[in-house]
Image: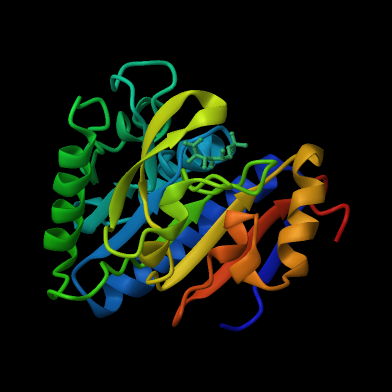
Length: 245
Ligand code: 6PG
């Protein structure tokens, strides 16, 4: 995999606008040559402004939303209207204004988390037309990163980091005392493009450590394990998060 590209922006607004511009360009490029565009969206707080901008007329009018399949990278195991729900954040920031997008929600509130993971994996593979034995290949996956180096719901020291069979898996995060559903590393590493969106001074140390590289096999920083075999990785960071680079 080639070295990650790093795009630095003055602040979160600039980073979010840059990400929205690139999303539109990617969607137009993909739809110029095909009939679908697939993206997986993370939760948390960083991407909210990016999603809000995508929903504005300035950007939304440039995307053929009925041909766009949007998936979730991960979800907290809470009801979809819970304040902690990633779906709720994405819905309020974007989907309410762009109802024509084909959004595939992770039903992480289901009591049978294994069944919910299987159902979502099936939906992902069916939508993308994944051939048996292959990993579902998304056009682009938008990831965040926690101060501990986690990404998606792949937290340091958790079992799901070693998952090499399932595309979607439940993961109990002891430090949050919370269950999550998450795309697994093989799916992240099958993507055509990975875009990390990271902002804030509190992330600067970890951004520096993760981008310094090192032996990913021994990595205690899951974000460092995101190394698409045939895809690219681009980091969108603000100046505060880039200050240790
Ligand atoms: C989640 C996210 C998670 C997030 C990081 C960064 O469910 O919380 O998917 O991986 O991207 O925790 O979160 P912030 O953007 O809020 O810093």
